[in-house]
Length: 277
Image 1 (cartoon, one colour):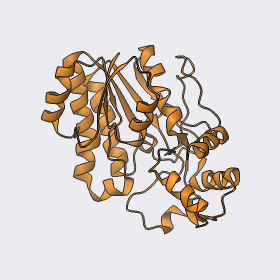
Image 2 (cartoon, one colour):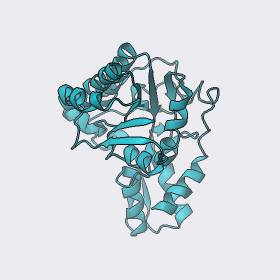
Image 3 (tube, helix red, strand yellow):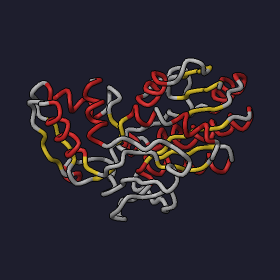
Image 4 (tube, one colour):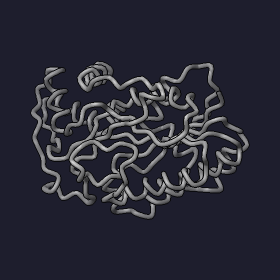
């Protein structure tokens, strides 16, 4: 299959490129090579390649950065998705678009499935929801995949915190915000199996166990015997620019029915991520 990867330099993009079988014809684009917020660049660069599928791993994912730079957030996360959907439509491709748990407000008190109504609290969440809506309206042949609390990409929050703990330093973890920690390679490994189902729609693909970043770091510390200490933090005491949902954990009504392999338990994911680190 001829695959075009936007956001190939990000954590999910790099993980996917490491795992994708070599018989696929893959055209990766980093942000430096393609700014998806530039509509004319998207159409000029992608349509002539005639991909069968466009994988959108590109986004402005810094939650507080989005709050401080809303124009940049909407350009990348909303209009970028719009441009990729239009490019996919122009060349008859499927669009695989990655979204976020932050489209929910976190007040439900239990994991959100695909049919719960979004109600984002932040610019990041609103911009990602706008991107979802552009994709759905413009292109029937799409996958919108929401995920959450990704870790293990090499340059992410979790990886940096684990390295501090390994060096005997302290690391803070928010203890009053719950999500679905997701190992980036486990998500990347499920992209093509879902794509090949051709059962288009919205899916939640995230770790199975709702918990906090504090708990994730404590588990990593004990699993790896790290000497640093994990310090619990409260979100409202950190002076963060963007509000975070209290519990944006995800569950799925559909992934098992379409044959997507279940995600491994969190402890297995942490062990694998620590071994690679």
